[in-house]
Each structure stands twice: as structure tokens, then as C-alpha cells.
Length: 114
Image (cartoon, rainbow, N blue to C red; front, side, top):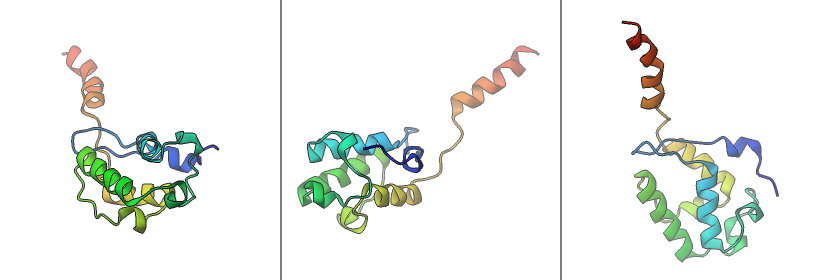
């Protein structure tokens, strides 16, 4: 199964400058569901793959730890598919800021010309 291209481009920076790509979520789900990431259909409710309350709470904890979010324990019941979960995360995570490295690289030639 291929992942819709609209989902693969969803990325946000974390509080520490990291990124939440679609792949991070799929890797986590793969771990908890004990299946290959490519076998998880983004439109199928995660409960159909065997996502139970223990795995759901563990994923909530991962999101809190990784991205500094305060996550309700009902997150996966409120957003039961990968598509719904990614859309929700897109809304609650801060918008990506310009990368400091890219800014430094852009300014470097100007400094060298002085």
C-alpha cells in the first residue's frame, strides 16, 4: 500500500527543533501494532489493526515526550486513523520556523564580502 502524497509532506518542528514527519508516526505505529509501516492504511481505524488502550497510551506518551505536547488519553479514539491523527497534529504543533542553519548559510556569503 502506498501512502497518499498529501500525508507524506506533513512535517512540523518540535520544541527542540526536530521534525515530525509522517515516517516518525508510522514507525511508532509499526512498533505498537507489530506490523510493517507500509501495511498500515492511513484511512483504516487503528483499532482494526489491534491498537489497544495500552498501545494508545504509549503512543500518547511518545508524542508528549517527543514534541512537548499535552495529549489527552482519548487522542486515538478522537482521531482513529493515521490521516485524522496527522491532521490533528498539524493543527496542534507550532508551525515550522526557519532553520537557523539555513539562515546562517544564507548570510555567510555576505559576511565574507566585507
